[in-house]
Amino acid sequence: QVQLVESGGGLVQAGGSLRLSCAASGRNFNSYAMGWFRQAPGKEREFVAAITWSGGSTYDEVSVKGRFTISRDNAKNTVSLQMNSLKPEDTAVYYCAARQFTTSQEMGVTRRADYWGQGTQVTVSS
Image (cartoon, rainbow, N blue to C red; front, side, top):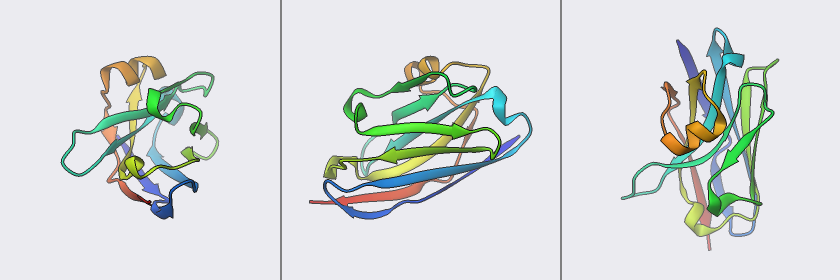
């Protein structure tokens, strides 16, 4: 069992930056690929970025490439999402997710996770 708690959301102007963090509790954190997903009002949840258990490989959704960076610290059981050059269309609830024994690419392609956080709101004003 893994519990995930997101933080760092808020209101920012277009072009600004935010850093989301996800704290994980439970066993064997370093056996999980970690990812970020988001859901805008009236839309389905979509994949944003994922990172393998070791942090050695990441996989990003096309619209965030070059703007968002996912990273993890296995010593602290945390995963972060640095978001730069934010756009109004990035407005959504952002969810942290964990999936065991998988790769970042598979997590991005399948959009599947074993555990989800409660989400944190990100609002980008124009």
